[in-house]
Length: 199
Image 1 (tube, rainbow, N blue to C red):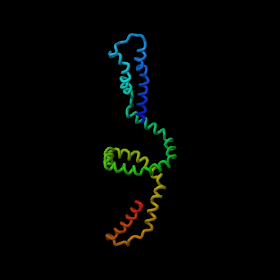
Image 2: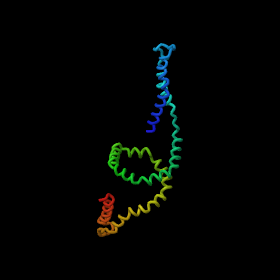
Image 3: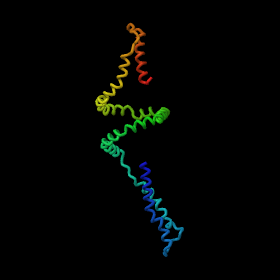
Image 4: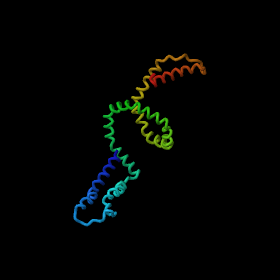
């Protein structure tokens, strides 16, 4: 969208600056002065100038190198931490409503991604090196604070499973090595899976 706005502005400037040049043949036609023959190349030059100027104008757009732009991105984004926090605090309702409304889009997007095998391509593009670099630096730094912040969520998520385990009646324990003991593990696994998928 920004690119389109910039393009529109450039075209408008070129057209406005070309106005006098376009009007020159008209104004000179009514004056008593000598003219070159109409079929000479010089007579059509003012009309062609705006179009000849377009490549010059568009070629004047200067793009900084990627490294400088990346540094600028980090600097500006870091300085906007307060704006980010304020925006998130006010966006909870919109996030919930819009995310719920996007469920069909999510399903279609995931289905298309599976068909295109984008998951595997993304893993290959990132590579083992990026995983190790990010996990061993940023991940290691954030792990303790992330765990500490998740204490309440962990308790909330684990409590229903702990209550269900406490209320279960398992099959009787068999002698060590008896295949019947597997029934106890199966009962626990089935209960936990049913709770996880909401059935």
